[in-house]
Image 1 (cartoon, rainbow, N blue to C red):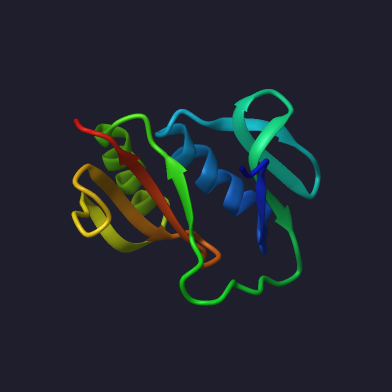
Image 2: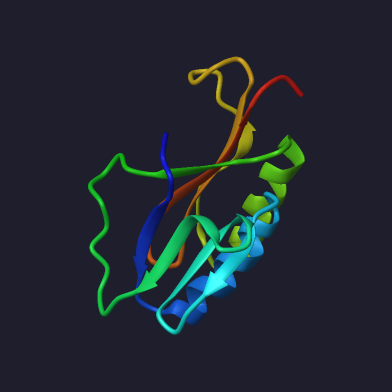
Length: 125
């Protein structure tokens, strides 16, 4: 349904360093870069997620978050560990979330600008 989504960030270098590492754990990579933005996805020039340098960030209201598809539970674990190593704030360690479904395995963090992000796989191990 969605083509892509973008976040405003206050420090592009800090945010690209963060997302380069944590999204690599899920099989994504930076697919383009400019002086003021960067895009992530799978194919060159086709971003699914972008970050854009802005003087200030206005976070979305409580409840908004972005969930990245993970290829495995191990990738969710790696995403969470990498995010914490990169300075993210922990919002929920990797694990099953039975209130979302029998196979919903996810981890949650706040990125460097305070966005709530998630890595999730929703299928049997």
